[in-house]
Amino acid sequence: MADQQAMPRPGNTGLLSGVLLCLASMSSIQFGSAFSATAISAYGPSTTTFFRLIMAALVLALVVRPPMRSYSREQWLSALSLGATMAAMTLCFFAAIDRIPLGLAVAIEFLGPLAVATWSLGGGWRLVWPLAAFAGVVLLSHDGAGWVGDPVGVLFACGAGIGWGTYIILMKKTGRMFRGLEGLSMSLLVAAVAAAPFGLPRAAEAFNPEGLGMMLGLAVLVPLLPYALEMIALRRMPTSAFGILMSLEPALGALAGFLVLGQPMTPFQMLGTALVVAASAGVTSGGDDES
Image (cartoon, rainbow, N blue to C red; front, side, top):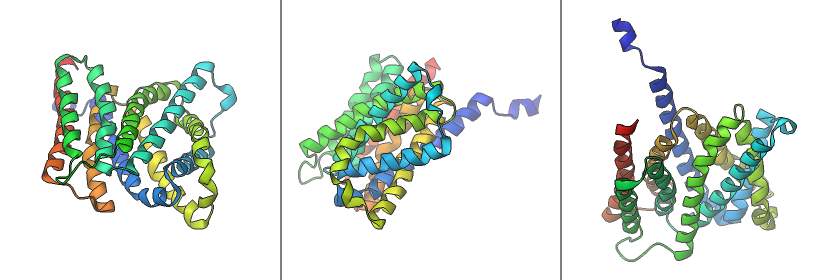
């Protein structure tokens, strides 16, 4: 009896593996985004987005070999919706980090999944947590000498936040409708096509060994590896828990910005990051009594 009690429940094991997958995905996204600064500077955010999506889509399609002719209308609509969202989210985010610090861009983008988590738990008094996150974003926007939030960059980050919130909902739905990584493979192909009109004008500039090698490496870091990890994680945990865990993104984004891009933070900006992360902890504790 004691041995049986000591064994972890399958649900707990699945949740733990989902958490670990989320942490690996977040690290890949944030450090991949930081390493993308060189490519964005050389070829522009739209071209970088297109190359990363098309390379990730081709690699995954060769591995998964999705049977496209066998899919139903509902599966195609799901893949089209998720792919278009992926393209819009990535285009907006890369355009944002081309204009504002990585930590600020991630914090603004995070307001999307935090809204999803709050809505999943019923809203109400929990709306205090999105407000706390917003206050954190305001603190992050000032470096002690002035406002660092370029208006266009902030708007792009807001667009990425809307895309990220939508992505979480659609990714879980798509993951359930397809076998294995077929849904992700189809969605990435759609995303690459959707991003093509924005990235093709300057694509010729990246057609050299250095440029293509850089893009392939970045495609593995973002989006191939994290999207695959997230789709698997979303099969093992609730949508709200996934959105909450992803709230650690601002802290990882700030760390990646500091280590890779040399973007230091003032004490008030660190407080802002802590507020955004604390908002997720508040949503987590608020959902415990309903689980």
